[in-house]
Image (cartoon, rainbow, N blue to C red):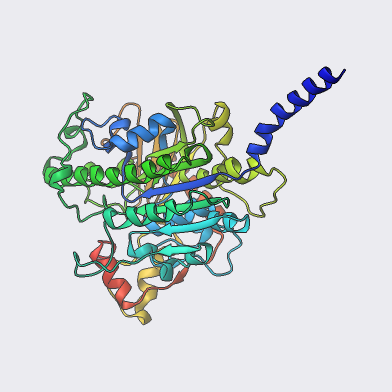
Length: 463
């Protein structure tokens, strides 16, 4: 009888151990890389080895082949990732415009803060400084020190200045029982591109070279420099992940890597950049999640997902998975990918949507500001992808561009139905109705000063 009782107790204890382990809230390392397009990464089929450490992260976790950002500017994109809402919902449509003070939406770091996490942020761009974003209140540490000697206007900093500080903070958490949320933002792939000779990406992957197919002949020097910036950034992504693994924290840490948006390098016969565009090169971004022992290594999901899916996914994988009864009083526009990540559940096809707002086109006094902010009430461009069909609408030019990405993967040859045709009218009505239905918040608070305008101009956000 005693033997039977002992066996039962042993069985109960062995069953209880995983449950106790699950009670420990996991850490989160959230890495956002600015201006990083998916199709310039080796793991996404690029013909040069630009991203060995990011590729390795993908091999250890799950890679979302068709992930899309919701907008093409840095601060609004991050707000959307942190709230699971579109810019016209949370109110920040341009860089330098914070979400309204009395927003009804919760932020991801705010939720972590409320649930006992130690939060830290290390950001690399003027547009994400605490004064402009007001995100610092959700972090114990918000490092936005941009005072560097290598630039006339301190509008950004390099990865070599950011990653070591993040790693130093991380090392302090090795024996800490309190869970942490670490956000690291790396800016380097953003223009102006600097050719980093040490990181010149020349080694081939064996994949086809589609450069000429994308119409980039006129800017090959910029393509080369852009690739070197990716390889340079990748080096420091590796430093952050390696530090985490060396500390023995990998098994209880969810690592997320994503870009805020991509970059046009001359495709579609347009200017370089991103703020005004919604081409595939701009809206299709890398998205990787790694959690050893929880997320199967090496999986690739081809279903279309959005960056607004990240917040509900991360909340479900961390707080809701550990403490299912926790009430989080906010709503998401995105969907949780947690069942897909943990159990391989299918993701039903869903429309992914994106918007771009025109913003300020030249410097004007504040009293004249309404003239350059009039277009905040409606996007400069708005579009969606459903299946292989992608639709972009430019209201000011009264044009609709429709691309079949199965036949034209780089979107170089869109069909453009004439204004007034049934197809044109149907698409315009559908996109207008969607935008109007989701236009919830007032326009964000303009926190720009003359110094901010100067910094934004140096980054190419103001022409």
